[in-house]
Image 1 (tube, rainbow, N blue to C red):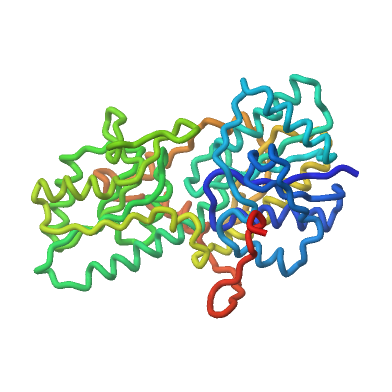
Image 2 (image 1 turned 90 degrees about the vertical axis):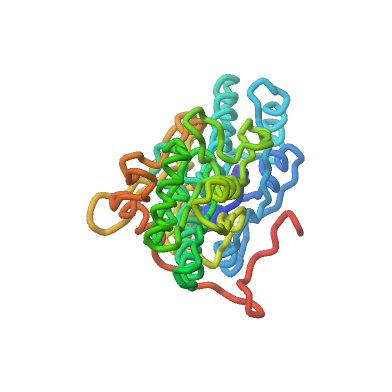
Length: 403
């Protein structure tokens, strides 16, 4: 029998480990691979032969792994470039050495590009005994061709919860205290996370990358809100930008290894504009930063279940010996009851494309999200998983890269 390997890449989420747990469980139920290895720190760990054997994971560890946030196998930001042939050769040689037939790579857009690149290399060099499968995860929800991405729903639930609770906080003071509260979310190119704050029902101004930032219009809307009720609740995506493409928070922004702008600070930039214009005497800015992607106490039961089942599905798909270069996605079923089915799509049709929040779901003049958008979001955040606690805190598995 051959073996398989599971690895994680990119930014972590609160449910990324559930997909790995699903792959492990699937092989225990249908052992088509002799060993299920975990690659520590993504492609970097695979290149360094840093593996752990997950084959005989206990049911208890599997269950706790599903509630453990962040990437238990470790992650990386390693760019596998197509002209770096030595990396491809080394990966194939390592897979040969450990008799690894299939690599499951859990990640976002750049990870799907890695799956596509490895599959292309194998195809172009007539390598038929190694296969590469992508499992999506991203809180940004910006992968095309799948209804949504594992990890997004739990982040959306966290953001909507923070929006609701902080709205209650800011409104505790009387109308004599005029104030703007600004909540900044992740979302470099897509406004899904920022839009999810509208599930709270209390967002007055929503600023997302899909609609160019018009300073005069935004300030006028905030001023009208302050005049009406003395408070204004604003949600801004880190990727908010002017019509010329300049980021609201550009400042001294640098690019990461994938060429993406390293953002953060849109909320503070907006605060400066508000105060300079005299729209309100005071502002508070809450940047959710990395908390929004890995806060597991607001895991959506739907998200955890779908992430686990996606791992099951990915493993099942590899029973077909020709299955490679694919990403397993989710499709929303027709009908009044929410449910999804799993399907496969070529990874190169996903990599390097961005799925934006639909413009038709946005209200005019930065006023928030239409009911169609809220109806898309609501089913995803339903339910909370049963959580095991230890000494008053949620139990978690010790990350495998720390053992």
